[in-house]
Length: 191
Ligand SMILES: [Zn+2]
Ligand SMILES: [Zn+2]
Image 1 (cartoon, rainbow, N blue to C red):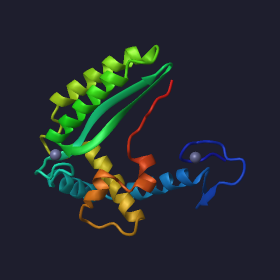
Image 2: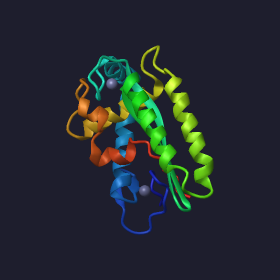
Image 3: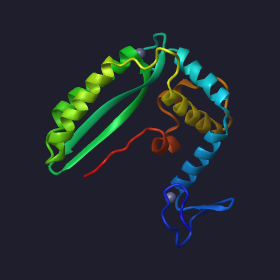
């Protein structure tokens, strides 16, 4: 039997849920959150997402639009190079600050791994610069904010009842326990 979340083969143990069996607690929680997230209708998600979009910035409290802005960070050490895309729910101004900070950190810490540091660092620097000039949210919430909203709603549901208002803390630090793994898009690639 294979785990529906990570498709690892389960030989012993595992966590049963209906007719599925998960390999670990974390995979079980991920499976659960995905199931809950998919059950919300598009309209409910868009309403929630629009509320975030029109709300105030979790960082500086100034009025929106608030959306997901990506920033890119790479660091290297000897032969290992790690990079990730951060998805920040912020106003444009704070997002630009974050992109600057990831750019500068990448500039200082990205190069020091062979060979990928030398290749990936300039890519990440350019990606931050491009992101600074992009303004993805001229026409309302982006798809990526909708997707994020869906997961925030699911997390709220799991933590004892989804409310139709936005829980600001969740937006910025979405339910650490479960969501650390699921939400914070963290495709850290180790080489
Ligand atoms: Zn698994
Ligand atoms: Zn802000």
